[in-house]
Image (cartoon, rainbow, N blue to C red; front, side, top):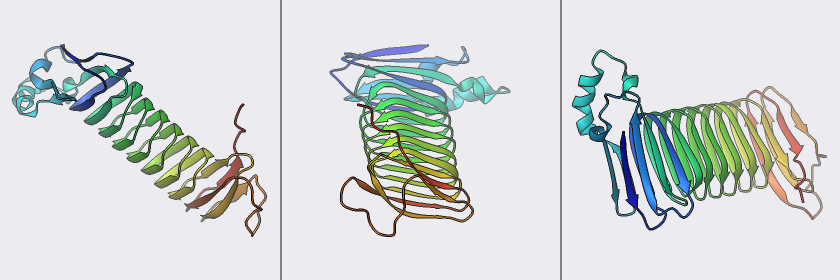
Length: 276
């Protein structure tokens, strides 16, 4: 096991990169230290030589040492499975810290209050509890789940589900296949997909969805109005609201819903009232 602790004055930036395994980030309120723990699945893997862990100014570097890894891994893994190079990384840092993570195949979990986050992964699930800032993700396969996001999101993925709880900023999502579900979108939402079921439970900004196939469902607050621009090649439009050719009388909030799907129903429904 490799473990290092650094005194820090406040929120920092984590820069983490490695091949395979798992990384868990724990954001701790009023923390005065940052701690990194690395444990290999294979006890013979010399993580102290394979990883560089250091604090450079306000940036915490946790990086696989590729120069060292080349010869060591060839000797250790000769005749064995590449899974033996998997590691589990745990990072504790002050709440509000940002994170930039680049991995080949790994699960990524962020717990507590984090700042801006950027993730690039070939495969593996990604979960965050709270991101106070902008979220950028690019992945091949795996589920993305975020409970709360105060900024904008730019999400790109090949396959897998995307679940976002409440988002304050603008959303831009592009996936090959899977399910996209957004709880409450306070800003504008844009989704592009090859094949996906897209649901925005509560839309308070404009919605723009285009997919080759899959149903689209959008919820609107009671008392709000929507301008619809929708088309489906094989499916039906279903709406719980009265439809008119002209704009409604003044009063209430209004959004625009633009939806295109090659195959699937498009549903516009009333969202649940806001609880007092």
